[in-house]
Image (cartoon, rainbow, N blue to C red; front, side, top):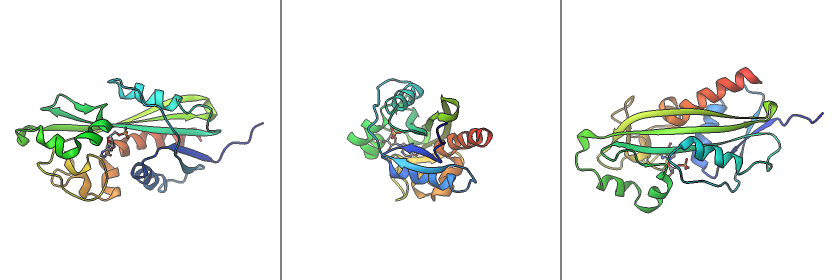
Amino acid sequence: MEKEDPNIYFVTGNIHKFNEIFNLFSKENMKYNLKRKDLETIEIQTTDLKKVALFKLNSIKGQINGSYFIEDAGFFVDTPLNGFPGVYSSYVMETIGNRGILRLIDDFNMTKAHFTSVIALYFKPLDKNLFFEGTVQGKLSKAMIGSRGFGFDPIFLSNEIPNKTFAELTIEEKNKISHRGRAWSKFIEFLRKNS
Ligand code: IMP
């Protein structure tokens, strides 16, 4: 019988995401060690975040022996941008960035925004793909504030901590309420039950 791999691999090139998840993982008494692997993944363009995550997960099939997961997130400005940039978040961040998003807004009193995170896990012991989703609701900050975090963090104010952008929070504070933190809680719950 093949020996079980003691590691679980988070496939990501984003060190901020890894640090957030590592911080949560290190609070658990799991039988796995969390490792980062930076592999080439394929990201398709569709409006369904879960489909993007599944395709990404399948694009690394066969390259890792044990269990592994990827995480895919999107930033949605529901009011007034009807969910833009959503699944195009990476491209928008690389092109117009936070400053460009803020320029699209006329009335900051009316904004609504959310982040959604999907963790897609290939769980070797069950030979199965599993998904864990998390969302955080909030609004846009009028200006970019804070130097922590990454991506859209400087312009997002959550409903839970409306006076600080995500970029002003510590990793622990962000993890407690964030899309990724919430997806992660479901993931951990599954691992607890299945290992
Ligand atoms: P992806 O999941 O790496 O494809 O993320 C899409 C885009 O959203 C990238 O530009 C990320 O920088 C941004 N993003 C993902 N997660 C977060 C977050 O927790 N805070 C701020 N921006 C994020």
